Image 1 (cartoon, rainbow, N blue to C red):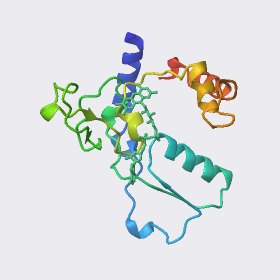
Image 2 (cartoon, protein in one colour):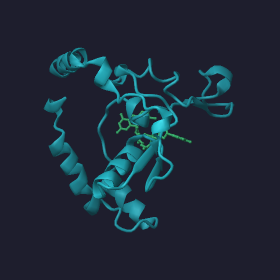
Image 3 (spheres, helix red, strand yellow):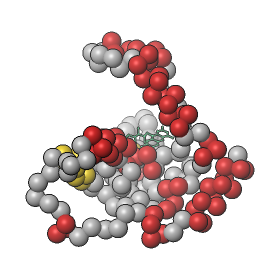
Amino acid sequence: MLKIFTSLATRLLALNHTNWNPPDRNLSEVKYEYDYIVIGGGTAGLVLASLLAKANMNSRTLVIEGGPNAPLTTEIPFYLSGIQNSKYDWNYRTLPQNRSCQSFDYGACHIPLGKMIGGSTLLRSMVYNTGTKRDWNRWENLGNPNWNWKTVLPYFKNYVEKYPLEHL
Ligand SMILES: Cc1cc2nc3c(=O)[nH]c(=O)nc-3n(C[C@H](O)[C@H](O)[C@H](O)COP(=O)(O)OP(=O)(O)OC[C@H]3O[C@@H](n4cnc5c(N)ncnc54)[C@H](O)[C@@H]3O)c2cc1C
């Protein structure tokens, strides 16, 4: 654990703030026509946009994200408190509850949701897990052909092999 934190701290210190995020673009650079427009630059949106762009190098893909660039602190595992409840969070609340959420103001729970380039993946705990075999197979049975454990498992394995912990 100490090794991971030391390695992360070293990486953070080595990061040059100017290249942490892509430079802000002038709105005049936005074209009138795109082949693909992806709304939301979160986990799924950015993967989708990157795959679309790679599939056809001549195509133009625009990602529209409602939040700002992510702060450097999103690199720190479990550092939730400084990011949630901030401008990087949509800050949704439940309706006031009678029994639950009593520790929150007006009995309304806070529901954090990422509002930045990178989305909710940047205000989470960096915990890695997957759904269970039964969850995935149930998903297919609910009417999603091929979204079962057998077909998704190679992707999970691929991910773990490509990004082993020591690369942190
Ligand atoms: C508090 C919290 C902790 C979590 N912890 C973990 C964890 O430890 N491990 C784990 O594996 N998963 C975790 N997750 C789940 C993980 O973050 C999500 O499953 C994943 O981010 C979902 O990806 P997504 O692309 O569907 O949505 P998001 O990543 O949320 O992306 C949606 C993007 O769309 C943008 N957007 C929304 N509306 C608009 C609009 N109208 N116009 C423009 N942009 C818009 C948002 O700003 C956001 O950037 C956590 C989630 C939360 C909320």
